[in-house]
Image (tube, rainbow, N blue to C red):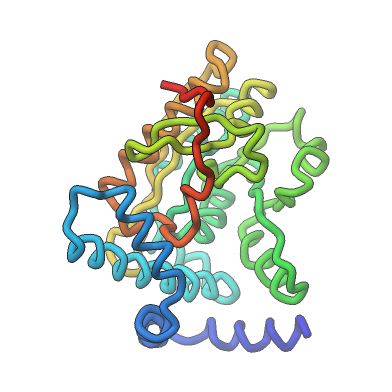
Amino acid sequence: MYYIVYTFFYLMSLLPLRVLYFISDGIYGILYYIVRYRREVVMNNLLIAFPEKSEEERTAIAKSFYHKLIDSMIESLKLLSASDAFFEKRFRGNWEVVEQFYQNGRSVQLHLGHNFNWDWGNMMIARKTSFQFIGVYMPIHNKAFEKLFKKIRSRGGAHLINATKMAREFLPFRRSLYCLGLIADQSPGRIDKAKWFYFFNRKTAFTIGPAKSAITNDAVIVFAFIKCVKRGYYEVEFTVNTQHPREQNADQLTLQFVKFLENNIRQYPDMWLWSHRRWKHEWKEGDTVVT
């Protein structure tokens, strides 16, 4: 089954990007207008985040989001066949912000949100720095697609570890120089281990695991945000949050990320994954909110 899936998507990846975008536009029409994929979730999330905007403004953000969501999926197929030069031209960043810490013998944790196109970002950070890049991923139940996306996301030398087995699979890297990429805006799997923060003026649960990991391993925390310059062209901006995570606690470090993430989403609202249920957990009376 895997080879059938791989062959189909590999052949599809050989198509010029302009043709793939034509396909993407068609899928957008079906997904948004006919299937209405998670439309209710997306619009509810946008209402929570931007109550001051009109319905027309939120709808415009939603439509742009769906276009970028499908584009990112289509673009990820290019990782199966496109040359390194293709990505060098289309994905840029201030890589020196991360690379300096390799030269200084410090490991790095990248904290970022669900911003498009993170698959291209995985590949480029692995190529553009001297670190062993480690990406954390959620497994896919279908084994054929699981194998395909691991192949896509490990291009460039990235090493992938299963999020459900992270503690065990990360152990071999703890004493090496590494750059660990963490999508730090995941809705917590265990709400009893989460902390509450104001995110878009609403009490929101965040996991503090990324911050605790940086403290334990004394890893430099670098925030990352990816923006679309124009269709098919991206730029990632790295910002050093702290070189000394042990001087703060996990709540403080997570609060800094929450503020960073919200600020960037407000600037580029269509670049964030609005289709996931970020506010599915309800705050209960008595739960402390970190401020």
